[in-house]
Length: 131
Image (cartoon, rainbow, N blue to C red; front, side, top):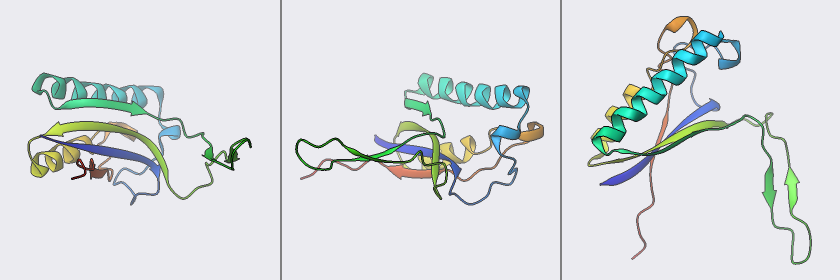
């Protein structure tokens, strides 16, 4: 088994086919999208392929160490950034092809008008143990 993360982006990825931003969706469209995501995760729980998923707020702050005894430096909020992660789902699958299959299916979650988004998801394997 290998773990992969499927990353959803608010922006920074190539445009979706149904490219209406979520903040312009109706409450029913948001509920349908979240319902699709939850149903997808439930199916993967049944197969043992689900690990975790989280949605992220568009607000946040970059933080870095600024030396011993000094408070951390912050930068942001970062909504002006080029790339903004909306959330992720971690899966544990037997093959890369299975990871591709699931990412393709997840990209069809409904969006505006109930039509599939066909959004680009970033699929990345977890870094394996160091030898």
